[in-house]
Image (cartoon, rainbow, N blue to C red; front, side, top):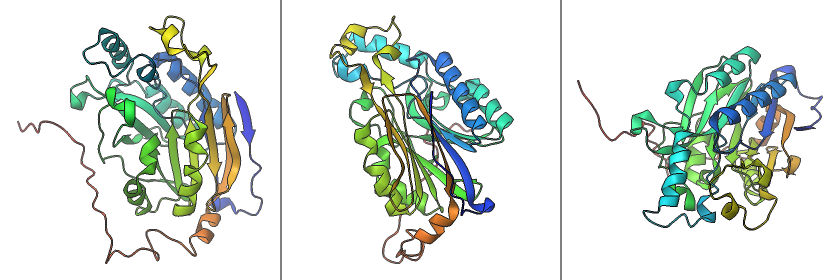
Length: 329
């Protein structure tokens, strides 16, 4: 894994400094245990670089459903699609089963917070649907939020269920308040507003991989929120599909070596890249960020403060976990 390290700002005070890492790695596709092993190795590497937070891409464990658009995924009642989905569901992450216990233990051991994108197989919704979830584990190894993506995008709707607002929360991390969103929900202005209203100053956006997702929106969010923005993408190369992948010849029929090219980056509160998006390789991006820069940029624009008009414009957010049945025994 290539290391990209951004020189620290020597003007920052100790109280304002936070070292963050962006782990752009590929899954062992549709293999939960092996992918989690890669995640755990990346956490160890990030911790060795002094990171207090490390982020991973969307749906990284056990991987993004790349088969859908490449195998006629919209065909109804199709045996091929049922076979793919059955395997995907089998490899989903069941948090209640302890699937993330290894990640939690490493977070506690190294005192490092983790944002991790998973495909969550949710017992509270019957255990046979998958939710694109962004899990925040704090530096004590405790899961503090599980944000289920509000709305799957395009072909994702053929494999993922709709989430809810329970994970629209922020977390204190050193001098920052950190929040996160999955992929295209970063385009939703009201979802961003819900995080801004809670004092977010470090925004984590996670993606399955692709410069087309990260070359403009993270910079816009940084300018809008006057916050640091992490854009953490996955990576998917032809070599990352296991040899026994069903329909592998169809999935790779275009002959491309790169299916998802990454594009992970870190953006400053003025919208400038601390490092240009990293492409085509597994990498760890490490940067020291400075909370005083956020304070300075908020002088002329503070979305939840002096530049808001709650008397004219307001937002209602339902953060209850959605369930089909309310049992009362």
